[in-house]
Structure formats: structure tokens, C-alpha cells
Image 1 (spheres, rainbow, N blue to C red):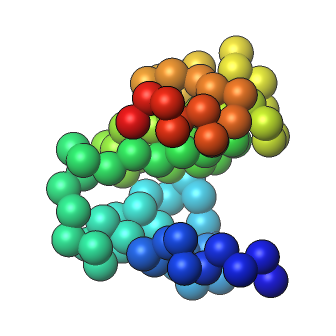
Image 2: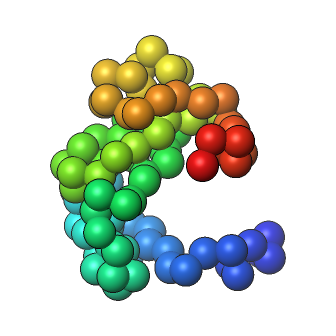
Length: 92
């Protein structure tokens, strides 16, 4: 509906695979795209996102514009916490 589909190589949601925090969602994406987990970054706004990243052994960045605060997200060992996903543009 947003017209953003062309910005993504692939997507997964809970009705296509195991729900978060099960790592299967990330494992499938990494396998489909043929990328190394060491070159993968999960960006998430919830503890479920970041726990999935931990379970999949993938680096993560927390964003506080969604479900949880930075203090809560930091418990899941993200590389850093940002206010918005767009803040990554200046970092990557």
C-alpha cells in the first residue's frame, strides 16, 4: 500500500514463518539472500526483534520510535539505540 516494496530484497512476516523471537525468520532471509550473518544487521523497535537477533546470532540496532524505550532495548545487547531507522543513514 505504501509503494515501498521495491526497497526490499525480501521480506518475512509471522504468517510466513516462525514468529519472533524464533530465529527462523532471520535464518531464512540470510539463506535466501546468500549473505553472511556477520554482515547482517537487524533493526528493530521491540524486545521481540532484538531477542530474535540474539537468537539468530545477528547484530542488531534498536530504534526507539516504536514499541520500547532505549533502556528496555539495551537489555538485548544492540550495537546502539537510535531514535529512528533513518538515523542509520549517517552511520552506515
